[in-house]
Length: 547
Image (cartoon, rainbow, N blue to C red):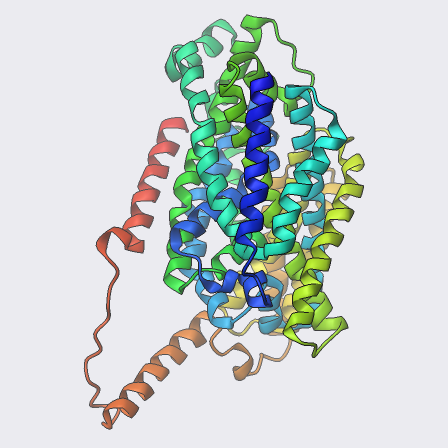
């Protein structure tokens, strides 16, 4: 145990030092909020995955859910990975880039107006602050149970390390640190899978023990649940995850999108998002499959697990030897720090860009908003710490957070997709539809008592879609200039028109006598279509094997 403490202590010192080092050249808002648009695609890949995987959205909460419900939890990795990451990378990111925005709410204002920008921003800020508090709680409890160190000092150390480099360095420091943490997570936590499979006779041996000796339901090993499952039946899972929740998450989550906005080129942003689906898929093997095997290990060793959220910690504590345990914990702490840092940076970006600069204090210098970003970061740290005692009382935190997200992401996905793919969608229609869809989601949970967040996400999406279309058709269409370049149809026509005009201007010829344009293609091994196709084939195979 002392050796594990030394390893973790060294790791935290190195993370703190590296974070401060990476922060030394951050001087303006472009550096602080968009990393000076300098990140290559592989940094984006690591940062996107590290952002998405933490104590809450990964090892501890997802692992706890897998311990209770089985392989169904892999849906978050195997459906979000192939479909939403690829779709967002290939389509939505390009519109964000061309709009020249800092935040997703900023894009919504460009398309629909300031009201929906403010509403969406405030809703995400609530979720972000709760997320940081939950990450701190899970991280503090995990280290307390594993290393027997006090809870609150641990929480302050965690937020002190990640808060310092995020406050000083913004997105630039966060992306570089997240890439480092991505590597540490992969190396530090992958061995557990092989250890567990060896102890249980491989995956088939694991299934045989639970199905024949323990009489566990076959649903425990299926990614497509039946009608009585808390997630809802299989078709709802597919529709809600693939077409609503995951798209809304990947295209609407400021932390995810902001990493891509910091890429050095649009192609790097696209490729980084598409390739990030590979580690996203592997995530199920890091914390879902091990927790499916955990009940066997606990039974053999007489270990009692009081809370599902604590199952992952008890598993590694009773399974890994000293030294290896320290390396493994360092990997888990990397997951937590990367998630906290990304949400912290994105929260401050929205506070400054979507509220402070947009509505409160306009026309100040770039340096003023740069300092405001650091002040906002510090304020969010304090607010998150104040909320930690609240999340102490929440059982299965991930379930609560996913329900809140489903209420927001269903309406958002409908409004975003209509806004991009149907240029007729207007401001009154989007605002009415968004508010109506959000209210309907709340009614489903509070009025009808439906707690299946997949159903909440799907039906709030459908209702928002219908109401927005009806309200749009009953009101005036948007002005052409307002949607130029930020909708699918207008973007296509504007690009064709720009190419035609540029060709004519450069060559001095008429539009009907256009010279040939040579397009430089990336190397075949970086071709987006190849990566997307290969990843989708793998996902279909996983669905077929585990369905």
